[in-house]
Image: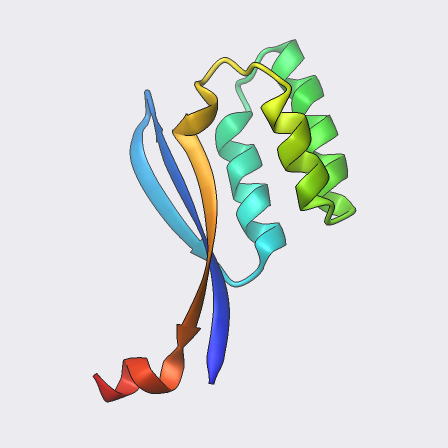
Length: 94
């Protein structure tokens, strides 16, 4: 049995952190929380609304294009998402 998971990595002034999610949408929602925290300024709150619209539509490719064309307060490469396929049967054998 194979399972897909998504990992979100972050490294900023709050320190390094990692989360694992069962859905791609959940991973991007976590990215959005880190990229645009609740104490964000007005511009970041507006960016969070745009990112949320992409995530709600599950348009992750469009979100990635939008992110690449924006400059955020944190360096863009401070946060990234990777998808992984895990073979549960092989993991249990080892």
